[in-house]
Image (cartoon, rainbow, N blue to C red):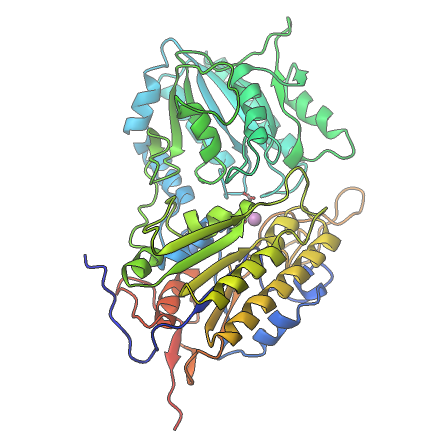
Length: 555
Ligand code: 3PG
Ligand code: CO
Protein backbone atom coordinates (compact mmCIF):
# COMPACT_ATOMS: atom_id res chain seq x y z
CA UNK A 1 0.00 0.00 0.00
CA UNK A 2 1.14 3.48 -0.75
CA UNK A 3 1.75 5.88 2.09
CA UNK A 4 0.94 8.91 -0.06
CA UNK A 5 -2.23 10.65 1.11
CA UNK A 6 -4.48 12.43 -1.38
CA UNK A 7 -4.42 16.18 -0.90
CA UNK A 8 -7.77 17.79 -0.24
CA UNK A 9 -7.91 21.22 -1.84
CA UNK A 10 -10.72 22.34 0.44
CA UNK A 11 -8.33 22.25 3.37
CA UNK A 12 -5.15 24.31 3.22
CA UNK A 13 -1.90 22.48 3.85
CA UNK A 14 0.84 23.49 6.25
CA UNK A 15 -1.23 24.81 9.14
CA UNK A 16 -0.06 24.12 12.67
CA UNK A 17 -2.61 21.83 14.29
CA UNK A 18 -2.83 21.34 18.06
CA UNK A 19 -4.48 18.07 19.07
CA UNK A 20 -5.40 18.22 22.73
CA UNK A 21 -6.66 15.11 24.53
CA UNK A 22 -8.23 15.67 27.93
CA UNK A 23 -7.90 12.38 29.75
CA UNK A 24 -11.03 11.30 31.60
CA UNK A 25 -13.20 14.25 30.53
CA UNK A 26 -16.73 13.21 29.65
CA UNK A 27 -20.00 15.05 29.21
CA UNK A 28 -22.74 14.50 31.79
CA UNK A 29 -25.66 16.36 33.35
CA UNK A 30 -24.54 19.01 35.81
CA UNK A 31 -24.88 18.04 39.46
CA UNK A 32 -22.79 17.97 42.64
CA UNK A 33 -20.85 14.90 41.48
CA UNK A 34 -19.85 16.37 38.13
CA UNK A 35 -16.41 17.87 38.81
CA UNK A 36 -16.14 19.38 35.36
CA UNK A 37 -19.38 21.25 35.94
CA UNK A 38 -18.27 22.25 39.46
CA UNK A 39 -14.88 23.50 38.31
CA UNK A 40 -14.33 26.86 36.67
CA UNK A 41 -13.76 25.94 33.05
CA UNK A 42 -14.28 29.12 31.00
CA UNK A 43 -12.25 27.88 28.04
CA UNK A 44 -14.04 24.57 27.63
CA UNK A 45 -17.35 26.37 28.25
CA UNK A 46 -16.65 28.78 25.43
CA UNK A 47 -15.82 25.92 23.08
CA UNK A 48 -19.13 24.33 23.89
CA UNK A 49 -20.93 27.48 22.78
CA UNK A 50 -19.72 26.63 19.28
CA UNK A 51 -22.15 23.68 19.07
CA UNK A 52 -23.26 22.20 16.77
CA UNK A 53 -20.87 23.48 14.09
CA UNK A 54 -17.66 23.51 16.13
CA UNK A 55 -18.45 21.36 19.16
CA UNK A 56 -20.13 17.99 19.45
CA UNK A 57 -20.07 14.72 21.36
CA UNK A 58 -18.42 11.43 20.43
CA UNK A 59 -18.97 7.91 21.67
CA UNK A 60 -16.08 6.73 23.78
CA UNK A 61 -17.22 3.42 25.27
CA UNK A 62 -18.56 0.01 24.36
CA UNK A 63 -18.81 -1.55 20.93
CA UNK A 64 -18.36 1.85 19.27
CA UNK A 65 -14.67 1.67 20.24
CA UNK A 66 -14.16 -2.10 19.94
CA UNK A 67 -15.04 -3.23 23.46
CA UNK A 68 -17.07 -6.42 23.99
CA UNK A 69 -20.38 -4.83 25.05
CA UNK A 70 -22.04 -1.46 25.49
CA UNK A 71 -21.79 -1.93 29.25
CA UNK A 72 -18.02 -1.56 28.95
CA UNK A 73 -16.78 1.85 30.02
CA UNK A 74 -14.18 3.56 27.88
CA UNK A 75 -10.51 3.51 28.74
CA UNK A 76 -7.33 5.16 27.61
CA UNK A 77 -5.85 2.27 25.67
CA UNK A 78 -8.95 1.75 23.60
CA UNK A 79 -9.58 5.48 23.36
CA UNK A 80 -6.14 6.47 22.15
CA UNK A 81 -5.96 3.45 19.83
CA UNK A 82 -9.16 4.66 18.18
CA UNK A 83 -8.08 8.31 18.09
CA UNK A 84 -4.76 7.48 16.47
CA UNK A 85 -5.75 4.61 14.20
CA UNK A 86 -9.01 6.02 12.84
CA UNK A 87 -10.60 2.59 12.73
CA UNK A 88 -12.35 0.37 15.26
CA UNK A 89 -10.59 -2.84 16.21
CA UNK A 90 -11.85 -5.72 18.28
CA UNK A 91 -9.83 -4.91 21.39
CA UNK A 92 -7.87 -7.19 23.73
CA UNK A 93 -10.87 -7.79 26.01
CA UNK A 94 -12.93 -9.04 23.10
CA UNK A 95 -10.16 -11.08 21.51
CA UNK A 96 -9.54 -12.92 24.78
CA UNK A 97 -13.29 -13.55 25.16
CA UNK A 98 -13.38 -15.11 21.72
CA UNK A 99 -10.24 -17.20 22.22
CA UNK A 100 -11.61 -18.56 25.50
CA UNK A 101 -15.07 -19.24 24.09
CA UNK A 102 -13.74 -21.12 21.08
CA UNK A 103 -10.99 -22.87 23.03
CA UNK A 104 -8.43 -21.57 20.51
CA UNK A 105 -6.42 -20.12 23.37
CA UNK A 106 -5.34 -23.67 24.31
CA UNK A 107 -4.24 -24.51 20.77
CA UNK A 108 -1.90 -21.59 20.22
CA UNK A 109 1.86 -21.45 20.42
CA UNK A 110 1.79 -19.54 23.72
CA UNK A 111 -0.22 -22.12 25.60
CA UNK A 112 1.87 -24.98 24.18
CA UNK A 113 4.94 -23.17 25.45
CA UNK A 114 3.72 -22.83 29.03
CA UNK A 115 2.26 -26.34 28.95
CA UNK A 116 5.77 -27.75 28.63
CA UNK A 117 6.17 -26.91 32.33
CA UNK A 118 2.95 -28.51 33.55
CA UNK A 119 4.41 -31.95 34.31
CA UNK A 120 7.17 -30.82 36.65
CA UNK A 121 6.48 -27.18 37.38
CA UNK A 122 3.87 -24.79 38.71
CA UNK A 123 1.68 -22.53 36.59
CA UNK A 124 1.68 -18.99 38.01
CA UNK A 125 -0.97 -16.46 37.04
CA UNK A 126 -0.27 -12.80 37.75
CA UNK A 127 -2.81 -10.07 37.09
CA UNK A 128 -5.49 -7.62 38.14
CA UNK A 129 -8.39 -9.09 40.09
CA UNK A 130 -11.27 -7.02 38.73
CA UNK A 131 -14.41 -7.00 36.67
CA UNK A 132 -13.58 -3.55 35.31
CA UNK A 133 -12.77 -4.91 31.87
CA UNK A 134 -10.01 -2.33 31.44
CA UNK A 135 -6.88 -4.39 32.11
CA UNK A 136 -8.34 -7.82 32.81
CA UNK A 137 -11.63 -9.49 33.62
CA UNK A 138 -12.39 -11.81 36.49
CA UNK A 139 -14.57 -14.15 34.42
CA UNK A 140 -11.69 -14.60 31.96
CA UNK A 141 -9.41 -15.62 34.83
CA UNK A 142 -12.05 -18.08 36.02
CA UNK A 143 -12.40 -19.64 32.59
CA UNK A 144 -8.69 -19.81 32.03
CA UNK A 145 -8.07 -21.48 35.38
CA UNK A 146 -10.55 -24.21 34.52
CA UNK A 147 -9.22 -24.60 31.00
CA UNK A 148 -5.60 -24.76 32.10
CA UNK A 149 -6.48 -27.64 34.43
CA UNK A 150 -8.38 -29.47 31.71
CA UNK A 151 -5.24 -29.08 29.62
CA UNK A 152 -2.92 -30.52 32.20
CA UNK A 153 -1.97 -27.94 34.83
CA UNK A 154 -1.51 -29.75 38.16
CA UNK A 155 -0.14 -27.04 40.41
CA UNK A 156 -1.31 -23.43 40.15
CA UNK A 157 -0.41 -20.31 42.08
CA UNK A 158 -2.32 -17.08 41.55
CA UNK A 159 -0.70 -13.73 42.36
CA UNK A 160 -3.47 -11.21 42.80
CA UNK A 161 -3.35 -7.48 42.21
CA UNK A 162 -6.30 -5.75 43.86
CA UNK A 163 -8.14 -3.03 41.94
CA UNK A 164 -10.54 -0.41 43.39
CA UNK A 165 -9.78 1.87 40.42
CA UNK A 166 -11.73 0.28 37.56
CA UNK A 167 -14.29 -0.95 40.10
CA UNK A 168 -15.44 0.24 43.53
CA UNK A 169 -12.99 0.35 46.42
CA UNK A 170 -13.53 -2.58 48.76
CA UNK A 171 -14.59 -5.02 46.06
CA UNK A 172 -11.25 -6.83 46.45
CA UNK A 173 -12.68 -8.87 49.33
CA UNK A 174 -15.50 -10.27 47.23
CA UNK A 175 -13.20 -11.11 44.33
CA UNK A 176 -10.79 -12.95 46.62
CA UNK A 177 -13.68 -14.91 48.10
CA UNK A 178 -14.93 -15.91 44.66
CA UNK A 179 -11.44 -16.87 43.56
CA UNK A 180 -10.87 -18.94 46.69
CA UNK A 181 -14.13 -20.75 45.92
CA UNK A 182 -12.96 -21.59 42.43
CA UNK A 183 -9.56 -22.74 43.66
CA UNK A 184 -11.23 -24.96 46.29
CA UNK A 185 -13.21 -26.63 43.49
CA UNK A 186 -10.00 -27.23 41.56
CA UNK A 187 -8.40 -28.73 44.65
CA UNK A 188 -11.34 -31.15 44.93
CA UNK A 189 -10.40 -32.28 41.45
CA UNK A 190 -6.85 -32.93 42.55
CA UNK A 191 -5.22 -29.72 41.34
CA UNK A 192 -2.99 -28.05 43.93
CA UNK A 193 -4.30 -24.50 43.38
CA UNK A 194 -3.75 -21.55 45.74
CA UNK A 195 -3.30 -17.82 45.95
CA UNK A 196 0.37 -17.11 46.63
CA UNK A 197 0.90 -13.36 46.87
CA UNK A 198 -0.61 -10.01 46.09
CA UNK A 199 -0.87 -6.28 46.62
CA UNK A 200 -2.67 -3.16 45.40
CA UNK A 201 -2.34 -2.19 41.74
CA UNK A 202 -0.94 1.32 42.32
CA UNK A 203 1.68 0.09 44.78
CA UNK A 204 2.59 -3.34 43.52
CA UNK A 205 3.57 -4.67 40.05
CA UNK A 206 1.37 -2.51 37.78
CA UNK A 207 3.37 0.68 37.26
CA UNK A 208 3.49 2.08 33.72
CA UNK A 209 5.78 4.09 31.49
CA UNK A 210 8.65 3.61 33.96
CA UNK A 211 7.13 6.05 36.39
CA UNK A 212 8.42 4.11 39.42
CA UNK A 213 10.30 0.81 39.15
CA UNK A 214 9.96 0.43 42.91
CA UNK A 215 6.34 -0.57 42.31
CA UNK A 216 7.41 -3.42 40.06
CA UNK A 217 10.17 -4.47 42.43
CA UNK A 218 7.67 -4.86 45.28
CA UNK A 219 5.67 -7.15 43.03
CA UNK A 220 8.75 -9.10 41.98
CA UNK A 221 9.77 -9.65 45.57
CA UNK A 222 6.31 -10.92 46.53
CA UNK A 223 5.44 -12.99 43.44
CA UNK A 224 8.85 -14.33 42.46
CA UNK A 225 10.93 -14.34 45.62
CA UNK A 226 8.06 -14.93 48.04
CA UNK A 227 9.14 -11.99 50.17
CA UNK A 228 6.96 -9.20 51.52
CA UNK A 229 6.59 -7.25 54.74
CA UNK A 230 3.16 -8.80 55.35
CA UNK A 231 2.64 -12.55 55.64
CA UNK A 232 -0.72 -14.25 55.98
CA UNK A 233 -2.06 -17.78 55.97
CA UNK A 234 -4.82 -16.86 53.51
CA UNK A 235 -5.54 -14.17 50.97
CA UNK A 236 -8.94 -13.35 52.44
CA UNK A 237 -7.28 -12.69 55.77
CA UNK A 238 -4.62 -10.63 53.99
CA UNK A 239 -7.02 -8.34 52.20
CA UNK A 240 -9.35 -7.92 55.17
CA UNK A 241 -6.54 -7.25 57.64
CA UNK A 242 -4.66 -4.85 55.41
CA UNK A 243 -7.85 -2.92 54.73
CA UNK A 244 -8.40 -2.37 58.45
CA UNK A 245 -5.90 0.49 58.35
CA UNK A 246 -8.22 3.50 57.88
CA UNK A 247 -5.92 4.90 55.21
CA UNK A 248 -5.80 1.62 53.26
CA UNK A 249 -7.66 1.04 50.02
CA UNK A 250 -7.64 -1.60 47.30
CA UNK A 251 -5.51 0.46 44.91
CA UNK A 252 -2.68 0.85 47.42
CA UNK A 253 -2.68 -2.36 49.48
CA UNK A 254 0.89 -3.21 50.51
CA UNK A 255 2.49 -6.36 49.11
CA UNK A 256 1.82 -9.62 50.93
CA UNK A 257 2.71 -13.29 50.59
CA UNK A 258 0.76 -16.33 51.69
CA UNK A 259 2.76 -18.69 53.89
CA UNK A 260 2.25 -22.23 55.18
CA UNK A 261 2.15 -23.27 58.85
CA UNK A 262 5.94 -23.13 59.05
CA UNK A 263 6.01 -19.59 57.64
CA UNK A 264 7.29 -20.64 54.22
CA UNK A 265 5.83 -18.85 51.15
CA UNK A 266 3.44 -21.17 49.33
CA UNK A 267 4.25 -20.08 45.82
CA UNK A 268 7.49 -18.36 44.87
CA UNK A 269 8.35 -18.66 41.18
CA UNK A 270 11.05 -21.28 40.61
CA UNK A 271 13.13 -22.71 37.77
CA UNK A 272 10.96 -24.85 35.53
CA UNK A 273 7.71 -22.99 36.31
CA UNK A 274 5.32 -21.41 33.82
CA UNK A 275 4.11 -17.83 34.25
CA UNK A 276 1.16 -16.08 32.61
CA UNK A 277 0.38 -12.40 33.12
CA UNK A 278 -3.35 -12.50 32.50
CA UNK A 279 -4.02 -8.79 31.86
CA UNK A 280 -4.89 -8.12 28.24
CA UNK A 281 -4.07 -4.43 28.42
CA UNK A 282 -0.51 -3.48 27.72
CA UNK A 283 0.64 -0.37 29.55
CA UNK A 284 0.77 -1.71 33.08
CA UNK A 285 2.20 -5.10 32.08
CA UNK A 286 5.18 -3.98 30.03
CA UNK A 287 7.46 -3.34 33.00
CA UNK A 288 6.83 -6.62 34.81
CA UNK A 289 7.04 -8.41 31.45
CA UNK A 290 10.54 -7.00 30.97
CA UNK A 291 11.55 -8.20 34.42
CA UNK A 292 10.19 -11.68 33.72
CA UNK A 293 11.62 -11.98 30.23
CA UNK A 294 14.86 -10.05 29.78
CA UNK A 295 18.12 -11.83 30.47
CA UNK A 296 19.82 -8.47 30.86
CA UNK A 297 17.85 -6.23 33.14
CA UNK A 298 19.11 -3.45 35.38
CA UNK A 299 16.02 -1.64 36.63
CA UNK A 300 16.20 -3.28 40.04
CA UNK A 301 18.06 -6.16 41.65
CA UNK A 302 16.06 -9.27 40.85
CA UNK A 303 18.17 -11.39 43.29
CA UNK A 304 17.00 -14.53 41.54
CA UNK A 305 16.07 -14.79 37.85
CA UNK A 306 14.19 -18.08 37.52
CA UNK A 307 14.30 -20.02 34.26
CA UNK A 308 10.63 -20.02 33.38
CA UNK A 309 8.34 -20.29 30.40
CA UNK A 310 6.60 -16.93 30.41
CA UNK A 311 3.63 -15.90 28.26
CA UNK A 312 1.52 -12.75 28.29
CA UNK A 313 -2.22 -12.95 27.77
CA UNK A 314 -1.40 -10.77 24.74
CA UNK A 315 1.81 -9.50 23.27
CA UNK A 316 2.01 -6.11 24.95
CA UNK A 317 4.45 -4.24 22.72
CA UNK A 318 4.46 -4.86 18.98
CA UNK A 319 7.74 -3.07 18.36
CA UNK A 320 9.69 -4.73 21.18
CA UNK A 321 7.88 -8.03 20.53
CA UNK A 322 7.32 -8.21 24.27
CA UNK A 323 6.67 -10.75 25.59
CA UNK A 324 7.89 -13.09 22.90
CA UNK A 325 5.28 -15.70 23.88
CA UNK A 326 1.60 -14.88 24.31
CA UNK A 327 -1.72 -16.68 24.45
CA UNK A 328 -3.83 -14.43 22.22
CA UNK A 329 -2.68 -12.31 19.29
CA UNK A 330 -3.25 -8.60 19.90
CA UNK A 331 -5.32 -6.49 17.51
CA UNK A 332 -3.23 -5.74 14.46
CA UNK A 333 -3.38 -1.99 14.48
CA UNK A 334 -1.55 -0.84 11.39
CA UNK A 335 -1.29 2.21 9.15
CA UNK A 336 -2.10 4.57 12.01
CA UNK A 337 -2.60 8.26 11.30
CA UNK A 338 0.73 9.08 12.91
CA UNK A 339 2.59 6.82 10.53
CA UNK A 340 0.76 8.25 7.52
CA UNK A 341 1.45 11.81 8.54
CA UNK A 342 5.21 11.37 8.85
CA UNK A 343 5.19 9.84 5.36
CA UNK A 344 3.42 12.97 4.12
CA UNK A 345 5.85 15.53 5.50
CA UNK A 346 3.87 16.36 8.63
CA UNK A 347 6.28 16.98 11.49
CA UNK A 348 4.81 15.80 14.75
CA UNK A 349 5.47 16.72 18.36
CA UNK A 350 3.79 14.75 21.16
CA UNK A 351 3.96 15.53 24.85
CA UNK A 352 2.50 14.49 28.15
CA UNK A 353 3.66 13.77 31.67
CA UNK A 354 4.98 10.33 32.55
CA UNK A 355 1.75 8.73 33.72
CA UNK A 356 0.12 9.48 30.36
CA UNK A 357 3.15 9.74 28.11
CA UNK A 358 2.60 6.40 26.41
CA UNK A 359 -1.02 7.29 25.80
CA UNK A 360 -0.23 9.97 23.19
CA UNK A 361 2.71 7.99 21.76
CA UNK A 362 2.52 4.20 22.31
CA UNK A 363 -1.29 3.82 22.37
CA UNK A 364 -1.77 6.54 19.76
CA UNK A 365 0.53 4.60 17.42
CA UNK A 366 -1.27 1.29 17.87
CA UNK A 367 0.68 -0.07 20.86
CA UNK A 368 3.99 0.51 19.17
CA UNK A 369 6.89 2.07 21.04
CA UNK A 370 9.39 4.46 19.49
CA UNK A 371 9.32 6.79 16.52
CA UNK A 372 8.22 6.03 12.98
CA UNK A 373 10.83 8.51 11.78
CA UNK A 374 12.94 10.31 14.36
CA UNK A 375 13.72 13.06 11.87
CA UNK A 376 10.05 13.95 11.63
CA UNK A 377 8.91 13.41 15.21
CA UNK A 378 9.74 14.41 18.74
CA UNK A 379 8.11 12.85 21.79
CA UNK A 380 8.65 14.84 24.96
CA UNK A 381 8.01 13.48 28.43
CA UNK A 382 7.51 15.68 31.48
CA UNK A 383 8.26 13.70 34.65
CA UNK A 384 5.18 13.10 36.81
CA UNK A 385 5.27 13.55 40.55
CA UNK A 386 6.00 10.22 42.20
CA UNK A 387 5.35 8.82 45.63
CA UNK A 388 2.03 10.64 46.04
CA UNK A 389 -1.57 10.03 45.13
CA UNK A 390 -2.67 12.66 42.69
CA UNK A 391 -5.34 14.18 44.92
CA UNK A 392 -2.38 15.56 46.88
CA UNK A 393 -1.05 17.28 43.74
CA UNK A 394 -4.19 17.72 41.59
CA UNK A 395 -2.73 20.28 39.21
CA UNK A 396 -0.22 17.65 38.18
CA UNK A 397 1.92 18.84 35.24
CA UNK A 398 -0.89 20.44 33.24
CA UNK A 399 0.78 23.84 33.21
CA UNK A 400 4.19 22.44 32.28
CA UNK A 401 2.70 20.42 29.42
CA UNK A 402 0.80 23.43 28.13
CA UNK A 403 3.84 25.70 28.31
CA UNK A 404 5.91 23.15 26.45
CA UNK A 405 3.22 22.85 23.78
CA UNK A 406 2.99 26.64 23.57
CA UNK A 407 6.74 26.99 23.05
CA UNK A 408 6.77 24.31 20.38
CA UNK A 409 3.79 25.85 18.59
CA UNK A 410 5.40 29.29 18.64
CA UNK A 411 8.65 27.81 17.32
CA UNK A 412 6.71 26.70 14.21
CA UNK A 413 8.95 23.69 13.91
CA UNK A 414 6.14 21.12 13.93
CA UNK A 415 2.85 20.80 12.05
CA UNK A 416 1.10 18.72 14.67
CA UNK A 417 1.48 19.34 18.39
CA UNK A 418 -0.32 16.65 20.35
CA UNK A 419 -0.74 16.60 24.11
CA UNK A 420 -2.57 14.64 26.77
CA UNK A 421 -3.70 16.43 29.94
CA UNK A 422 -4.02 13.83 32.66
CA UNK A 423 -5.84 15.48 35.55
CA UNK A 424 -9.50 14.62 34.93
CA UNK A 425 -8.53 10.98 34.85
CA UNK A 426 -5.71 10.62 37.34
CA UNK A 427 -7.30 12.75 40.02
CA UNK A 428 -10.74 11.36 39.17
CA UNK A 429 -9.43 7.86 39.93
CA UNK A 430 -8.72 8.89 43.52
CA UNK A 431 -12.44 9.52 44.13
CA UNK A 432 -11.57 12.85 45.75
CA UNK A 433 -14.16 15.34 44.51
CA UNK A 434 -12.50 18.52 45.81
CA UNK A 435 -9.16 17.60 44.32
CA UNK A 436 -10.71 16.60 41.01
CA UNK A 437 -12.34 20.02 40.73
CA UNK A 438 -8.91 21.62 41.19
CA UNK A 439 -7.52 19.25 38.54
CA UNK A 440 -10.23 20.12 36.03
CA UNK A 441 -9.64 23.84 36.48
CA UNK A 442 -5.94 23.29 35.83
CA UNK A 443 -6.78 21.43 32.64
CA UNK A 444 -8.98 24.27 31.44
CA UNK A 445 -6.19 26.77 32.06
CA UNK A 446 -3.78 24.55 30.16
CA UNK A 447 -6.13 24.34 27.20
CA UNK A 448 -6.27 28.14 27.13
CA UNK A 449 -2.49 28.39 26.93
CA UNK A 450 -2.41 26.03 23.94
CA UNK A 451 -5.29 27.77 22.19
CA UNK A 452 -3.71 31.19 22.68
CA UNK A 453 -0.52 29.93 21.05
CA UNK A 454 -2.52 28.53 18.15
CA UNK A 455 -4.12 31.95 17.81
CA UNK A 456 -0.72 33.59 17.52
CA UNK A 457 0.51 31.32 14.72
CA UNK A 458 -2.75 31.26 12.77
CA UNK A 459 -3.17 27.57 13.48
CA UNK A 460 -6.00 25.15 14.13
CA UNK A 461 -6.99 23.26 17.25
CA UNK A 462 -8.90 20.07 17.90
CA UNK A 463 -9.73 19.46 21.55
CA UNK A 464 -11.22 16.15 22.62
CA UNK A 465 -11.02 13.46 25.31
CA UNK A 466 -10.47 9.71 25.48
CA UNK A 467 -13.25 8.65 27.87
CA UNK A 468 -15.24 9.94 30.82
CA UNK A 469 -14.18 10.03 34.46
CA UNK A 470 -14.23 13.41 36.26
CA UNK A 471 -17.77 14.27 35.09
CA UNK A 472 -19.28 11.65 37.37
CA UNK A 473 -17.83 10.70 40.72
CA UNK A 474 -20.62 8.61 42.20
CA UNK A 475 -21.95 5.12 41.68
CA UNK A 476 -25.58 5.28 40.59
CA UNK A 477 -28.56 2.95 40.33
CA UNK A 478 -30.30 2.36 37.00
CA UNK A 479 -32.41 5.48 37.40
CA UNK A 480 -29.32 7.60 38.00
CA UNK A 481 -29.72 8.05 41.74
CA UNK A 482 -26.48 7.98 43.79
CA UNK A 483 -26.01 4.71 45.68
CA UNK A 484 -25.25 4.73 49.39
CA UNK A 485 -23.06 2.31 51.33
CA UNK A 486 -24.15 0.65 54.57
CA UNK A 487 -23.14 3.71 56.59
CA UNK A 488 -25.28 5.97 54.45
CA UNK A 489 -22.38 7.59 52.60
CA UNK A 490 -22.46 7.93 48.83
CA UNK A 491 -20.33 5.36 47.03
CA UNK A 492 -17.58 7.28 45.31
CA UNK A 493 -16.89 6.23 41.77
CA UNK A 494 -13.17 5.95 41.10
CA UNK A 495 -13.59 4.40 37.66
CA UNK A 496 -14.24 5.67 34.15
CA UNK A 497 -17.78 6.12 32.85
CA UNK A 498 -19.98 5.33 29.88
CA UNK A 499 -20.43 8.98 28.95
CA UNK A 500 -19.63 10.52 25.59
CA UNK A 501 -16.80 13.01 25.26
CA UNK A 502 -16.66 16.42 23.60
CA UNK A 503 -14.73 17.32 20.48
CA UNK A 504 -14.19 20.93 19.44
CA UNK A 505 -12.44 22.54 16.48
CA UNK A 506 -11.39 26.08 15.77
CA UNK A 507 -8.55 28.52 15.43
CA UNK A 508 -7.71 31.24 12.93
CA UNK A 509 -6.28 28.70 10.48
CA UNK A 510 -9.55 26.85 10.15
CA UNK A 511 -11.06 27.71 6.81
CA UNK A 512 -14.36 29.55 6.82
CA UNK A 513 -17.31 27.27 6.36
CA UNK A 514 -15.76 24.25 8.07
CA UNK A 515 -18.26 22.63 10.37
CA UNK A 516 -19.16 19.31 11.92
CA UNK A 517 -21.33 17.17 9.67
CA UNK A 518 -24.81 16.41 10.87
CA UNK A 519 -25.06 12.94 9.34
CA UNK A 520 -22.70 11.19 11.75
CA UNK A 521 -24.79 11.01 14.88
CA UNK A 522 -23.09 7.84 16.07
CA UNK A 523 -19.56 9.01 15.49
CA UNK A 524 -16.92 7.80 17.92
CA UNK A 525 -13.33 8.55 18.79
CA UNK A 526 -12.33 6.63 15.66
CA UNK A 527 -13.68 9.47 13.49
CA UNK A 528 -11.10 11.90 14.84
CA UNK A 529 -8.11 10.62 12.84
CA UNK A 530 -9.67 11.36 9.45
CA UNK A 531 -10.72 14.76 10.78
CA UNK A 532 -7.18 15.61 11.83
CA UNK A 533 -5.87 14.46 8.45
CA UNK A 534 -8.26 16.97 6.82
CA UNK A 535 -6.97 19.71 9.09
CA UNK A 536 -3.49 18.93 7.76
CA UNK A 537 -4.81 19.19 4.19
CA UNK A 538 -5.28 15.52 3.30
CA UNK A 539 -8.03 13.01 2.79
CA UNK A 540 -7.86 9.99 5.03
CA UNK A 541 -7.38 6.52 3.54
CA UNK A 542 -10.70 5.08 2.42
CA UNK A 543 -10.90 2.43 5.13
CA UNK A 544 -10.70 5.02 7.91
CA UNK A 545 -13.87 5.98 9.73
CA UNK A 546 -15.26 9.10 8.02
CA UNK A 547 -14.19 12.62 8.87
CA UNK A 548 -16.39 14.59 11.22
CA UNK A 549 -16.15 17.79 9.21
CA UNK A 550 -17.37 19.29 5.97
CA UNK A 551 -16.96 22.63 4.25
CA UNK A 552 -20.12 24.60 3.66
CA UNK A 553 -19.49 27.46 1.25
CA UNK A 554 -21.41 30.53 2.16
CA UNK A 555 -21.57 33.05 -0.67
C1 3PG B 1 -5.39 2.89 34.93
O1 3PG B 1 -4.66 2.07 34.38
O2 3PG B 1 -4.94 3.87 35.54
C2 3PG B 1 -6.87 2.67 34.89
O3 3PG B 1 -7.15 1.30 35.00
C3 3PG B 1 -7.44 3.12 33.60
O4 3PG B 1 -7.11 4.45 33.32
P1 3PG B 1 -6.73 4.95 31.87
O5 3PG B 1 -7.44 4.05 30.90
O6 3PG B 1 -7.30 6.33 31.85
O7 3PG B 1 -5.27 4.92 31.73
CO1 CO C 1 -8.20 6.32 33.79
